[in-house]
Every structure is written in structure tokens, then in C-alpha cells.
Length: 272
Image (cartoon, rainbow, N blue to C red):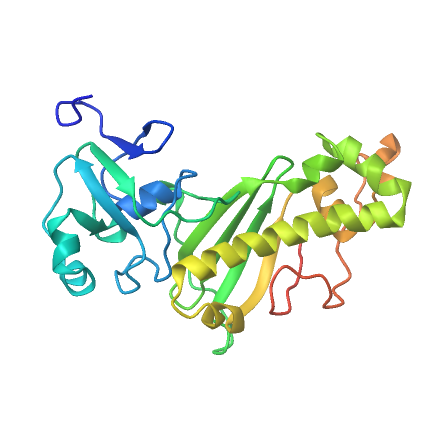
């Protein structure tokens, strides 16, 4: 495959089973492109080049010269062998790369940068609160975004399958399962909470040299979803949603926040 002559930019990852190729739009770093796939590299600094973990070797394709961070972090032997830091490369044409420090497999994928949005700085945020967690609790997918509330920008976001699918492919099946027993209802709610916690952990361990910084500075989590999904999360009135006469009525799915079973170390307020 002649990568240089391709019209569309394609990233090919060399694997033992064969190359895996994905198209990409120029702009993001190589690490950010890889993070949207299941073939990620190790990382722990948010892409600023100080952890030196995201090692790759360029097998084919043109890239920019070594950055100052790479000259500092990579040995002369590594540099001579074509080793680079994925976070320091912003490919503009097709590449073929080998991952020298692949990350463990994860259910979570980064949301591409083009899905990012800006927000107005929130009012009345205490100085001790730096971060907020936004969660889109969907029937099939869960999306989790960590926001820097002081700077009014998204730090990173993840998307993954909702593990509640094990209790039913649709919301009616899950509502029926939740009404069978309190234990089943708790298991369904906890599956979502655990997934949110996993996504949050995936963000902080890959974006921050000190993962405790966002954990200690996290103010609250805001969760949005349809009525059934929020009822399952809150473990409230699931039985009512199975009755057609309630389908056009207001049903309270506001959870009782007792500080237990929350998706992150800071006290979180669930809101639907």
C-alpha cells in the first residue's frame, strides 16, 4: 500500500494479525487519533510530552521533525531507530506506525475533538471546585466528559457501551428486570455507576500526571438521559413506567443522594 500517494489520509497500525487502517482528518495528534480506536498507546500526561510513555515507530509516511519534548525524552538510539512520541506528532498525510507501548484493552474510546463544544463559565463555582463531570446515559452508549469549570472547556471525553445491556436490550426489558427484585434493581443501577466511574478513571489516569488532582477538585456529576434510564439509575418508580397511564404524566426519578455508590470520589448530585 503506497501511503504517500493516497488521496485520503489513513493511519495504519501494524499488528501481528495484520495492519488495521482508519481514516483521519489532519489536526489531532497521533495519540488523539489512536485514542478514538481500540489500539491506544500508554499515556499519563494529557499529551504534553512529559511522561514519555506513548512510544511508536514510524514505519512509513512523512512527519515533522522531532520536537523539543522528544529530544529530551528519547535516547539517541531511539531517535535513530525512528521512535517517536505519539502525542507530539500531528500527521497531515497517511502514516503506517507500530505501537511500542500499547495500552491495555479498554471499553472506552475518546470522543473526537470535532464533537467538542464550548460552554459559558458557570456562575458561583467555589474556588475549591475545578472540575465537573457530564454524563449522557444512553440506552446503548454512555458518554462521559470531564470539564474544567474554571476555564469553561472540556478536558477529555469517553464513549463506551452501557453494561446495563446485559439486563435487557431495551428500556422496557430493563424496567421489568428492575421490578423483579430490589437486588436486581440495585445491580442494574450499579452497572451504570461503575461504568461512569471507569470512564472517569480512564480520563484522569491518561490526562493527568497526578490523577488525584481532578479527583479532589471534582464538584459534581450531572447526568442526563431519558426518563427510563434515569429511573433505573435512581432505582425509583421503575414499576410506574411500565404502566401506560403514566406515560404522559410526570414521574419523579430524582435519586436520593446518600453519598453511597457514586461514580467518583467526590460527592455527586445526580440530576435528570
